[in-house]
Length: 308
Image 1 (cartoon, helix red, strand yellow):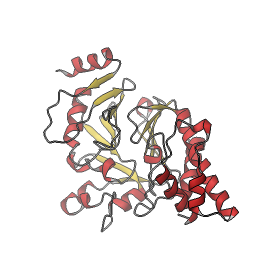
Image 2: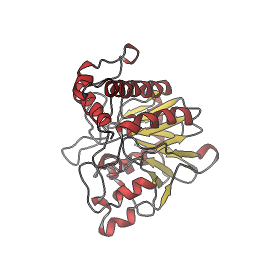
Image 3: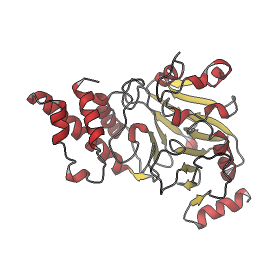
């Protein structure tokens, strides 16, 4: 199928193309499809009928005048798949890869791209990627030895703009949360933000307190700063949610998460135990479409009690 034919199919099918015709090279999940958000911006998504992590985090594909910008590269082994799907969209090469954070399911494919690519991360994420030892989800073993050439050369502290005009991409850092280096990626002209795992899905998040220097306590204020500090957004690409969502869902997520943090702090002030607070928690009716599994509630409340 030619690229022009493929893009016609994207439009004919309501801007969503499944790629089930791809032959599996291994007994593993396939990237399910290409979701077209605008003429220049696409998302490589997982199977909407399967809620597991599958291929890793959502990968955004942004076609600029000079090349393709990717946000996140999924689990190791999916680099070739991503390159093939980019080829369905455009004949331009991948020139820039932005990692929202260091975890293996968002940066695993980095080393499967040409080392001429400009890798861009928050400065704390570079520190995480450069660590001597990796525990659990931190991805640093991938960048040792000869692969050190894949360590990002472009970093920023609080804010960075890449390109200009219709191609402008703005990177924001608002503080600790899922890790200590989470980037919000804004496609300015499209009015779209990729949140990485600061908004994983419509439910309570996993927070990498143990190894990523994330913070359950600061997560809430970081969300509030993002809500206040990122202007003119209509659509959000969450880190793992199959479907993109309106900005109002991200605003609600901030309220949902901060409600739990407030309840935990009230429990501390009242002298109740973390277990008592977690057991008494119920999701407020206005956030009834957000998931709050009891084990995750207990974990986050305990982090707050431990000032983590």
